[in-house]
Image (cartoon, rainbow, N blue to C red; front, side, top):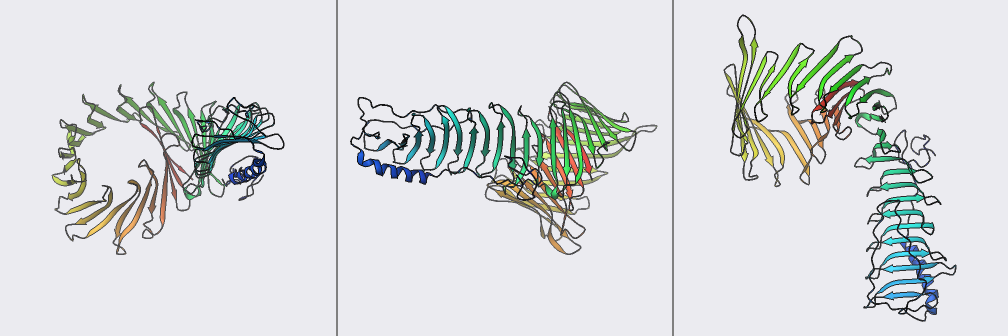
Length: 584
């Protein structure tokens, strides 16, 4: 079998091309209710003249079976009626059952080949279920309808209690689930679909019905393939392929659970290889080594090594370079709560942090730089004092800076006063308490030491969403739009930043676009090029938030040739390990 798009050979049963990711066309089973109904009407017309007795059964309750939740669970077969009870009468193999109000509930009749057809009805007269029995009295086919007459389940059987196939459908009629069995009744494969008819999972089984492997698929909003994941017979993800990333880059991730390794390989759109990243893990899932390769797979350009304590926190971090013999080392000392209290760099520089009884940082010593903090009774930071100590015959304090903070009763920052070298910069914040009891920021003013100031205002929609940020100077009073936010159903989906291009005289020139997911995470950032007055894209950053359970960022230029790859992987306490690379 070959791909219709690129011509590459693909395995039998594959849903997507392994080269270009194109969907492989596959004929789906279509169940036509109309055909079944026409056949039934014709049969009924022939046998209706032979009907002599109408069977009436009172207070019959009809229940619709629920959909099978597992492919391997097949409901026990119903058998055709074998004999009439004392209140039932049988003639010419035709049966009908009615409710007290005369509503037809069930109808059963025989075909010339000895098979039996049974139809069960909703109380409104629509068919809820159709069953075809063999001449031996066992179900061969079963079709279930919802109250709108749409097929929601159909199944077939080789023989008694021996399934052949099972299909389930969404209420709109789109295929949701399909399973196939061999003649021994063992499950062979299962396909699952989303409501947009995209295949989201395909599972293969061995001859004896045991699970073999599966593929999972994820899609973009336009239904194009975004990611394919391969799972082994134990259900572990062994390989991932991501398609159609920004700049034409795609990457393949291969997992090896036996030796706790993982390899990420990056490709350009033309198939040429960019580079790869290899990971090694400990038994707790922490990354212990990371190797970054460019075109040369023999020797890594960078080697990062991590060491952890019993709680899974990073205690030592080493960086090795292929072109120099020296390496860079970081070590961390943490308290019982996992807070970093000491940080040492190459045994030459260290940083220490002190906390009060409420776990608030009150002092940070970074070499000869000192930063001190104080708080009010509500836990708000009210003062920040920083300075540098110059060690000579006597210690001299230099570069002293003090920042004071004031808050309203809701805890919102009102004033930030920054004093440095006797020069004061003041930032003032104004809130609207009508839109929100806690107050939402309405106006911002920054006054500089020379007396000049900038003023910014936030504009909100009727739902309380900030939709625009404008700035203006007291010198001219003209407003300039600096940022716009866009929403769908009160969820932020996009933001734009602007600037005034004084070189060309243009106002509100777009310099950045950001796109967000439903959780407020920025998934894509487009930065526009200042070299041609922001008329072209300078670079694009895409972010994947579920790739490692942390965050992956990829920065790609307009040609897709240079990638800045940043991976932030959480440790057990929520801290982040940072890998920052350049792939060329």
